[in-house]
Length: 182
Image 1 (tube, rainbow, N blue to C red):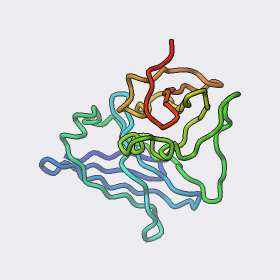
Image 2 (image 1 turned 45 degrees about the vertical axis):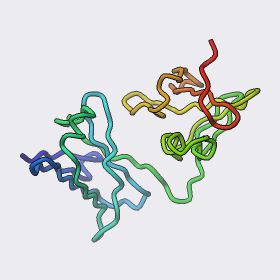
Image 3 (image 1 turned 45 degrees about the horizontal axis):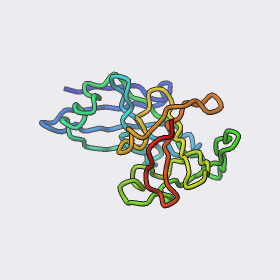
């Protein structure tokens, strides 16, 4: 069975083709030369990153093959839609304005005390606040996005910082998780 979804206000599309236990994904966008676009599959309130569109033959292309079982486990299959999002603009140094008492940490992975946590923290950026004996990382968590730092979900507090919903995690000075205070 083939499913086709419009992307970027009709400027592109994503086609999904079931092939046995796999799903073949093929997407295309008009190359507006603004930057890098990422493609997400939508389902049951979740967004699943399919990948980044790459320039090819004057268009932006995406090709990927995924496990149908994995998509079902994540609640993404059958999908409810798809979207393309401008993820990076070359030459842009824009970063979110940090709330009072916080700073922006572009690479939170460098602060982690173990490889698993470094991979979970990634390099998407987080707000940082130093405290006695450690620090807090606040990962922006917009509605509909996957929960950040899933290995540490039980350590998180969900807070609003300057109008942004964030998952806030406490760490010791060596980058190990701490139990939240009160």
